[in-house]
Length: 328
Image (cartoon, rainbow, N blue to C red; front, side, top):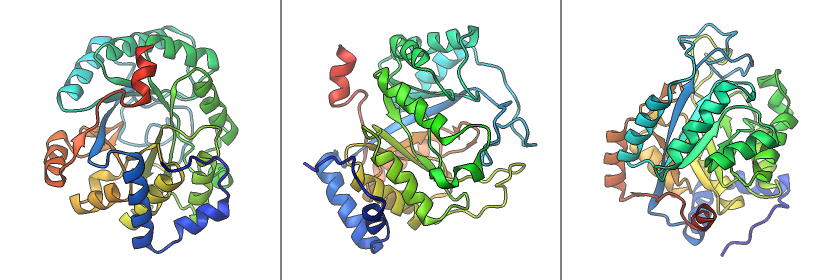
């Protein structure tokens, strides 16, 4: 067993992050073998249940109302349509279903009540239900938990030092407060970030340091590569290399050994060989389905072929300690 530490220093994380790439991958693979079933990858599906029109100014996001993008504003989806999408996801091997709404924060209104109904409906299918709805109060987190929510995604995006260069409509502490509210409600935490937004290696290390020194590590850490979208301030950013993704994934695996490390946005541009390297470096979760909120993603059939080629199997829902928590 690998000891779980919440007292990592930035210097220790930097030494891991900057180690020679082959050595880094090897060390991460050893930790992965010790703490995870390495032939398993959790397949998740992310559905945008309310798209566009967001009042925030996240520089990377095509759903911000202030940017002129191809994203069409859509109201909250109907319950039956969401349930149908969840059934399709389950039939295609997904064991976690995440619903995203382009809100700055959750409001106690009819739309939130409808989302609670969606959470109940999807939970009854045996899927791990995840939501990403913006900022939450502890009471709202508790309502989601009572409805059957298993996990809540709220990414930190980048380091605290670089954060103001990306977003001005909420603070880093706002994000940390939401993670605290989610944790106190007994909901599994999903939190990671995005690379390729003009940040430095020190910013990437800072992000990992913040996540790894939370009172409890997130159960899930998504590593996203920026997908530049026309009309956003980051439309002209260059794609990050697979080696940059590997450094993030491997370092996350070493310092947060029991977390699910998710190979998230940017996967559509990666070859099977590049994705295989990420799995070797410790990634053990992907998002499946043709879209990741509003950006392209490999379709189910491509992923099934990749799993067969690499000898991977989908991880079951509620695995490990989560099964006991769900049974309670």
